[in-house]
Image: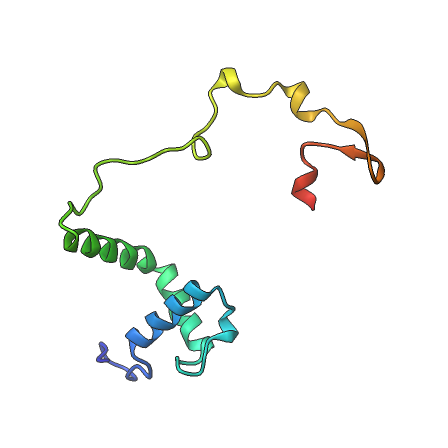
Length: 123
């Protein structure tokens, strides 16, 4: 917990990192971090500082490299997988402008309603 001067750190960085991992793993809110960890506002302050200095990505990359080395693999992946959900459509398969902006009347069990392609964005 040594620093480069000034007031010493009040919390161990390992405890801060463990609290962030707990938060991500359990999908809880910042204020719901258990009392076993440092206070949520300090954990969030560290996370924000690390995020702003791009250290979160650095932590992830270093951890990935160590895991790959321990498994006996190259540090950098040599192949990737792209599925249809993550790739863009080719121009020939893109819908026409008329088809994508058309609204239609439909009668269903609840009555008559508008059906538009962009209605899901405002739900």
